Length: 243
Ligand code: ADP
Image 1 (cartoon, rainbow, N blue to C red):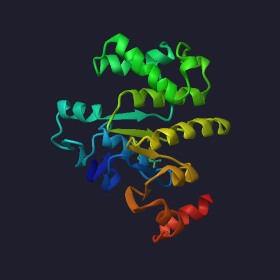
Image 2 (cartoon, rainbow, N blue to C red; image 1 turned 180 degrees about the vertical axis):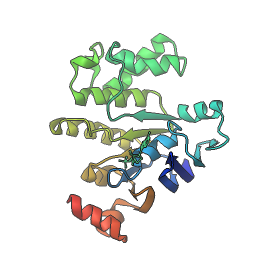
Image 3 (spheres, rainbow, N blue to C red; image 1 turned 45 degrees about the horizontal axis):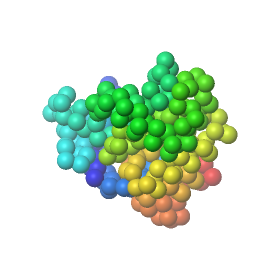
Image 4 (cartoon, rainbow, N blue to C red; image 1 turned 30 degrees about the horizontal axis):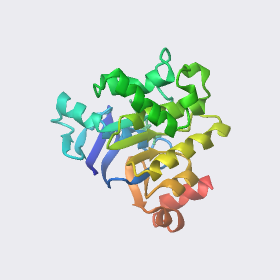
């Protein structure tokens, strides 16, 4: 289980997160929606302390890290419970697909090369890329590269996968294959928190929706409630505008 308590973040004197509380249960898929600049990505990056919150604490599983007191060691422990899928894939360009997936398994999780290779092939199978195992990122489409990004996260078997707008860098015709892979993983019961602009995907895949605006959670609930019966004016306006 994941719990965020009173997460605040300022850049200089600009408050970007104004006290976020959120609980995510094991196996749940939570999508964070909201206008550009509302703090969605920053919130996601605060969960694994890629951004250190100005205030508040993050609990994942058996560890709680506080914004102020969190030591390097605690942050590392917290980070090992997460894996992130980035907008721009962030693959190592000089490594093959399988080497990209093996990297964390060897360096972070200290698996043998042999074990790492076996685990990497298993996850490449899940994202439908076994035949590209020895290709280099540059030889792949954006959609395939992002599927490697997802395989890499999945291989680490984290408590939670954090996905930061995983399809926003892709050409429209490549979005579907990536969403399909994410959906398949979601169905396996892996906890995921997804920042996305893909509203119909979020509706389809999520157990829970969080709607943010101006650094706050304006409204949260099941997709049925948030999409069909939002209470807050800002939520209604947002969905009206994008429909
Ligand atoms: P969203 O993901 O909802 O589009 P972001 O979390 O990316 O929103 O950004 C929220 C606000 O924080 C924006 O005004 C953005 O300019 C600002 N911001 C984000 N990252 C930084 C940073 N590293 N330094 C300064 N300002 C930042």
